[in-house]
Amino acid sequence: MEINKSIHIWLQISTVVLILMIIVGGATRLTNSGLSIVHWKPITGVIPPLSLEQWEHSFNEYKNYPEFKLSNSEITLSNYKYIYYWEYLHRLLGRFIGFLFIIPFSFFLIKGYLNRKLIKQLLFIFLLGIIQGFIGWFMVKSGLVLNPYVSHYRLALHLIIAFFILSNIYKIKLSLMHQDENKISNFSYYNNFIKIVLLIIYLQVIYGAFNAGLKTVNIYNTFPFFNNNIIPSDIFSMKPIWLNFFENNSFVQFIHRYLAVLVLILCSVFCFKINTTRNRINFNAQYLIILVLFQCMLGILTLNAKAPIIFSLTHQLLASLLILTVIKIKHLLRFQ
Image 1 (cartoon, rainbow, N blue to C red):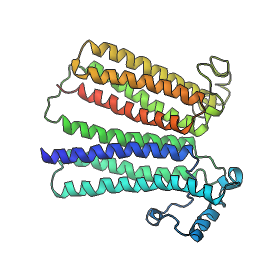
Image 2: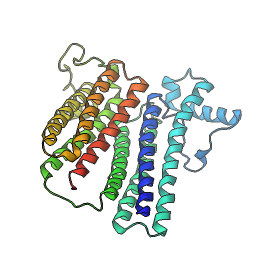
Image 3: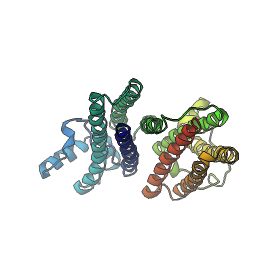
Image 4: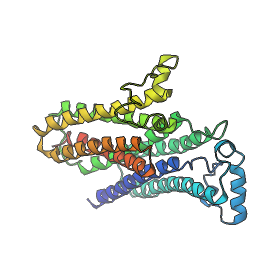
């Protein structure tokens, strides 16, 4: 019992730190800090510039890249330190998460506290973490070549993998909490229903990253209309047509808005139906619909205010809590 409790605490701490990492990553993007550190130094990069000479050297390296030359040429050393520290914090937290996994995992493995299934699940998460580190640099690199804009495809990939890692850690934690309970299949319909909701939310996360990367809020920031139009007039302006789904700012924002409406409708239907069927998850179902409502309202406020940092980061935080709540409901539907 104590062994499981220790692993549970480790996974709980990891869940909180991963949510923090997602928030810091969002802050790094919103402060335009992601391209401030132009070299990837996994080991030596843990120490930031300490002397004025080192700061000036780092600043001069930054000046050689497109962000300074094309959009940030007025930046001072003081301003550079500000954006540097946001990216530095993001990378430092990534390193911390690596140690947060490796050290406890090694301890539990040596002590024989982990069964074969759990070892495989945790190693899969570790593999995702390694991939995530490379994708993070791959994403940054896209803004260091010709123009100072990070690829929205790479940004979306980086974000969705972060949510996959968070989701898997949380699922393992839940499985340890309910390992002594019996699985049931009475609610397979509702389980499949909530699984569809979860997949749509993941898709919504991807389109949220597309919106952020393309900065669609600079084109449309009114709701429910798109600058006095119910549907943007240029949603199919790109050829071939399929390209509009991924690179047309108008259509990308249109999809993001109405995926949110779809999630709200599906969650409302689920909560209404499950509320008359299963008392065990009534509280979680009510919490889910409150989260979805707040997330939608916050999304509208973020759009209308042109994505201020506090609204945007809270929007990401609620997305994390929403996914974890759906996963918890899905898990509870499998046990009695």
